[in-house]
Length: 530
Ligand SMILES: *[C@@H]1O[C@H](CO)[C@@H](O)[C@H](O)[C@H]1NC(C)=O
Ligand SMILES: *[C@@H]1O[C@H](CO)[C@@H](O)[C@H](O)[C@H]1NC(C)=O
Ligand SMILES: *[C@@H]1O[C@H](CO)[C@@H](O)[C@H](O)[C@H]1NC(C)=O
Ligand SMILES: *[C@@H]1O[C@H](CO)[C@@H](O)[C@H](O)[C@H]1NC(C)=O
Image (tube, rainbow, N blue to C red):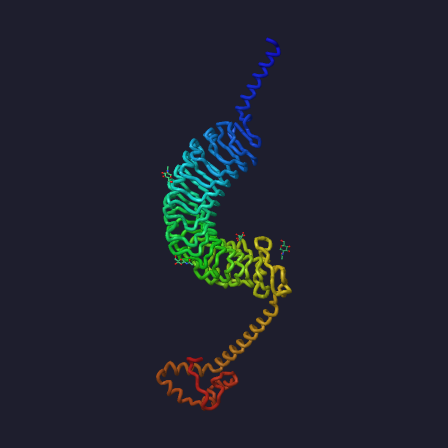
């Protein structure tokens, strides 16, 4: 054989070996734009234009991520990757998932199919996913959840069906999800809260997201089988009304979001059922006032957000009666809220954060909350009238200047002080000098008058001490004979001839009205009236 021939064979062998090596490392079949790591068994394809699943990836891969590409469907090549535990095909163009696409994926734990254009899933779509714990279908076009669609996934803990077009849910659609803890059904087109039967199938459910739907109302006992539910999100659910029994059975609920609905009153009666609720958001609703005891029953409430309620004008006295554990109160951006009486926030010894930002408050009562105990206070963006009534607030803000957790308070009125920070105003600018001076004058006059009265009285008592003693004796001794006793001292006699020892002070001069008249108009004063 010629040397050339030998060389040729050798080169050929080398190429084959190289190919084998590359194959083993997965390099040969790693599509451009992807990273394929055969040590960690991960394939990660960045944003690109892949429109079919790569065929010849390492069959042992455990993690496959093809996000932000142009995949149209899941084809049969998926069956080669049966070792996958994590599959992310989100942000592609998939319109459907063929039946039994995951029939060989008994190890798959997370499947992310969110943000595609999937219009339908059925009870054959997810067959084989016996160990899956997270399924994300958010941001697709699913309109209906059919009979037992998710039944093959007994280990599923989190199911995200948010941001679809779901308008109908078969009452048995979620059957078999005995381990489901978190369910997102928010941002769909549901017009009624899912049937009780739907929830009966979910004994482990802890978090339920139902916001951004159009429910109008919640049927009585709708959630009564969700005994372990700790979080219920009904934000933007179109609720006009929450009847007394709507929240029945939610014994473990800790956190609820009712913001951005159309509630015209705080559903006080329904709240009676939520003895363990700690966190409530009920902002952006239509009520005009928070009446006394509105949240009574929420004994464990710690954190309350009531912001952006465009019609709220008034918080009544005792509004938070019964919520003595409240720590965080956010009452901001209620553009019409101007009435906050001194006792509105009474009985809240644990308050540490108070946000009253961007309301319509013109003044604040010093007794509203124990201001100095607060860790965070925001009173900014209110049309405060900076006058003597806010002098205490100026002192408070100054005393907390260094800590920096108090937002600055700006004046809106009087116009001379507009946009000036209250804390930096000199005290006389708040108009307290005049007020204080006149107050002092009044107090001074009162003191002088009282002193004069007391002195006169004391003098009179002293000079008339004997007479008074006699009178006292007479009264206690005579009792019933009082009239006779009084007769013996006629008015004339009394006025004309002062009793012994009383001559020094003319009674009339002392200013005693009952002695002012002469003759028959005066009368002796029984000691009991003195
Ligand atoms: C799938 O749903 C159909 C009705 O839509 C039903 O007849 C069939 O029994 C279901 N299959 C399973 C495995 O639940
Ligand atoms: C509020 O709920 C009650 C009882 O469910 C119902 O009778 C009433 O019509 C509802 N009101 C509105 C405005 O939806
Ligand atoms: C109070 O609520 C507003 C509006 O929702 C929010 O932006 C702000 O962060 C909240 N402040 C605190 C201290 O929670
Ligand atoms: C408050 O603090 C600011 C800076 O944090 C400072 O400029 C200002 O002088 C302080 N005011 C008083 C009264 O201490």
